[in-house]
Image (tube, rainbow, N blue to C red):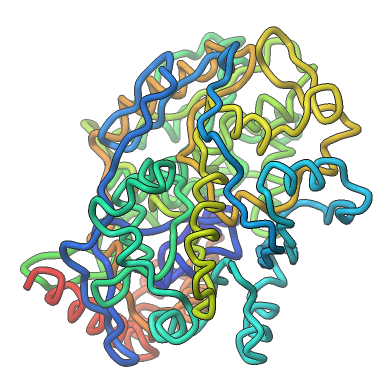
Amino acid sequence: MHEFATEKEFSRRNFGRGSLGVLALAALGGPLLSACSPGASGGGAAAQAKGTLPDFIRYEGVTPDLKGTDLGIPDVFYRYPAQPVKALGQAPGDGKAITSMVQTSSPIPPGVDKNAYWQELNRRLGSDLQISMTPATDYPSKFATVVAGDSLPDIFQVARGANSVPQLLQAKAANLTKHLSGGAIKDYPFLANIPSESWSAAMFGGEIFAIPIPRGVLQSTIQYRREDLLAAKGITAQPTSFQEYLSLCKELSNPKGNTWALTQVPINFIAQTLNVPNGWREEGGKLTSKDETPEMKEALEAGRKMFADGVVNPDAFAANAGQFKQWFLAGTAYFTGDSYSAWPAYYQQAAGQEGFKISALDVPGFDGGKGSLWIGSPTHSVVAFNKGAGDRLETFLHVANWLAAPFGTEEYLFRKYGVEGVHYALSGTDPVPLDSGVGQTQLGQQYLADAPTVLYLPGEEDVVKAQYEQMNRVLPDGTASPVEGLYSETEVRKGGQLEKKLRSVRDDILQGRQAVTAWDDAVKDWRSGGGDKIRAELEEALAASKA
């Protein structure tokens, strides 16, 4: 539910909390976990791992223009370093082919025989990296088929929706604990550069069975605003309450002019102004779902009012995330929900729009004061290595380490952009992709291993600085989920179905087809249909994590 459509992609409930959830995330390109590491305790809750997290050793070889923070706000770079650091002295491969499978959200590129980038990648790796790419929407079924056929490749991204991931990885994946826990990870310095909160997603029963794909707080969803269009109307101030926001939306909406304030009802943003918990509220080891709170009903009533007042595009409930982006970019909406990671993408998509400028709403309290942003999960997905790797396991880890080389290195520049003059040209020191090369470089390699994200948009220093400053204003008051890193098998198996039923009632309420009181029955159905079991499994895991 990224404010309905895109927000859905990042919902912790949809992904299943905990490592499995993160693992399961893989297919979407969506978020997850935190410092709790699940173990594999039957089909129910998983216990936290203790004392085996890899040491975090920050890479210091490149100096950012603005340094990231302990809150997970990324480093900022205004330009790519003029002399990228060659971080590794030799190829990580062993001369033998390495098989792998990943999701992709890009068109399938030409095969290696017709792909200069892939050929050069193999040369630099010192092994032929064979990558089986599957569209993200089809990846879960492909992964299930491969698992059922006992034909997992050397390296594999774990798919969203996979069942019993702790048991699956213990049965099919190499145990990485002795290679990566504590100080052992120093042999893989770029894996050591991945923050600790992401590693918990890859741990089960106190042991490490995978490596995480880090994304940090960029997966948090926010409310974007068209700063240029608002400034043209003399509007620069942030609303300080829900009522101010609603009044502004009424002022901006002009249905006869095909313009509305909002692409969709910002139900999660409203919930955050009311300090609705991020997924769950934990008190004394007991959990309350955000949907059970009275504040959630207040949010629904406020959202219903927004739609009734005509400030939301009337086609919102039939539209998708792509259409929301189009309305926002076209200026037929002033506000839209999306993740922090979309900030530079909007500028890239708006190339040629003179004066285009966006910002984001801070999170006011519903009646004034401060609300609390729901902080997104630090991990996109996890990647495992075949249990049959044998003496090649260290080679696979060295390849993953190479693929995780951070921003500012020569390895990162090649991995993300290819070869200068073939796949990109330089504008100053910044790489600019060439049309002739874009189709070759999208191999899904970022889902085998990747570096922590940074804030970077070539030639747009003001843009990345504005994002950094907004994140620093909002994230200190943000709220992380109390069940990050905890696993519920019931949630993985039934959470999506239960969420779909709740969302149907929610959408009816927002459109005025049902009264807000209908939410009470919807929540009762959620509880009896599996919600209470999810709660029990998470509480069991939570208790184990504190033992």
